[in-house]
Image 1 (tube, protein in one colour):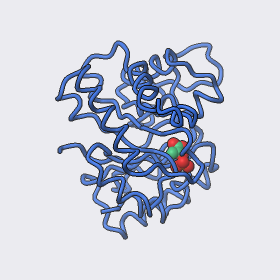
Image 2 (cartoon, helix red, strand yellow; image 1 turned 135 degrees about the horizontal axis):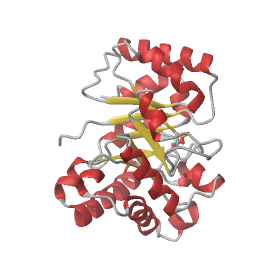
Image 3 (cartoon, helix red, strand yellow; image 1 turned 90 degrees about the horizontal axis):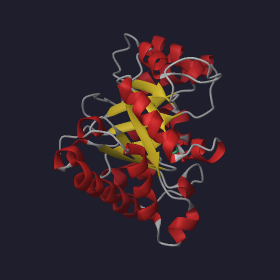
Image 4 (cartoon, protein in one colour; image 1 turned 30 degrees about the vertical axis):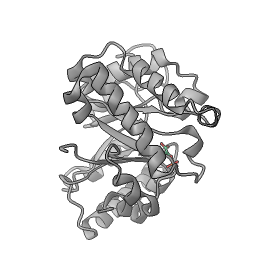
Amino acid sequence: MTRTPLIAGNWKMNLTYIEAQALLEDLVENLKEAGHKADAVEVAVLPPFVDIRTVQTVLDGSGSGIAFGGQDISEHESGAYTGEVSGTMLKALGATYAAVGHSERRQYHGETEQVTNAKVKAALANELSPILCVGEPLEERKAGKHVEYTLAQVEGGLEGLSAEEVKKVVIAYEPVWAIGTGEVATSEDAQEVCHEIRDLLATKFGDEVADAVRVLYGGSVKSSSIVDLMQQADVDGALVGGASLKADEFAKIATYN
Ligand code: PEP
């Protein structure tokens, strides 16, 4: 397998730019001490927009190899869209990623499949890799419809993309019931859905695409759960929320092996 694992920290709406600087400096130090090799496991952080310039400054010349990106991206390129941040702006800061369709965006900001798809395209148009977040709420899981529900979100998010474009997308399977609840899915639960996602990619875009795309698991990941998750054949990393706000814990997650 040639996919480089990705451990990405979603800081959500936490940390002033001063706190962000302190956390990131600690993280760089912790990763160095733990012998982190950026070519073996890629590490990324997704700060609030107002922290990104600070993050860029700390990382520039740090030699850490830590990448960064937005927690969201506007579907529009520029203009009268008050409060939004475009792909051009993120790219100009040196961002690599943009999360799209996080369940908190879908739930609290009414982001539809159509909006999510437009945001995936906006990221790609600016040479950013979208991290497309998908995953079922508890009711769907209880009804045994978690695979069907999640695959429909993957199809919706990737609608109209070429195989070459899909290769640049990262997909994060994040069951809604596991986000911020302390309820981590079992590694078998994660593998089941990540495998189905890869199968869908193979069917729709071919084996080369399915082999290239990184599929992450997200939902209450901690250093105590990462090893089992990473042993699963179709889990290529993790999207980490709460635990990414502690430099030592996040560094342990990123240096799981
Ligand atoms: C997330 O925000 O994507 C997430 C997985 O959060 P947590 O790790 O806190 O569940």
